[in-house]
Image (cartoon, helix red, strand yellow):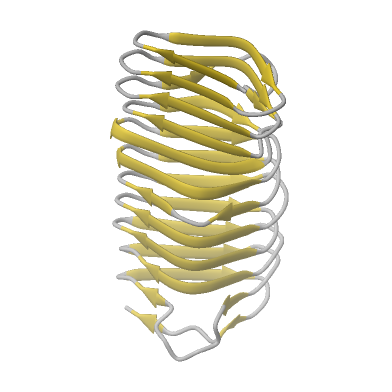
Length: 231
């Protein structure tokens, strides 16, 4: 395992371990070129930012789980198919790109947006953002347990979209380009659902309200069924 702790900046150029890697700076920024770990990667910047350097490949490689915590931005990081926890404790955004699929275990900002682009399926367990949320993939499904955004929410997936609960303070736009959309509970000022090559349905097929909004737009090439709306 590799553990590095500093009171100033940390620049990780090329670190590799067949176990865990932990980097912690108390008062500086943390920049990452390439980190490779068989198990977990934990990066912490108590009063600074975490930034990935553009190198043509993933900044973090192989890691099964990744934990990121910063006071400012977590930005420009490219990571592998993994389980991700990311938290910004001050003012700052989270910007992540995944070379495969990704599981979002816990994503939080205090005053910033969240932007994710993945190459495969996305599973979002808990996304709690004080700002706008944007999540999209270039292949695979998207399964969302919970999104809370103090801003707008934009979700685009290539296949099936299944969403249990989502709340946005302004706009919510959900789109599947080639699959169905199954929803549980959606709340926002305006809501737009688009299933380009599929249907829009109630995931639970119950009598509970599925959509609460002042304005709703639903578009599907297939069926739109079993939805309860409160407008």
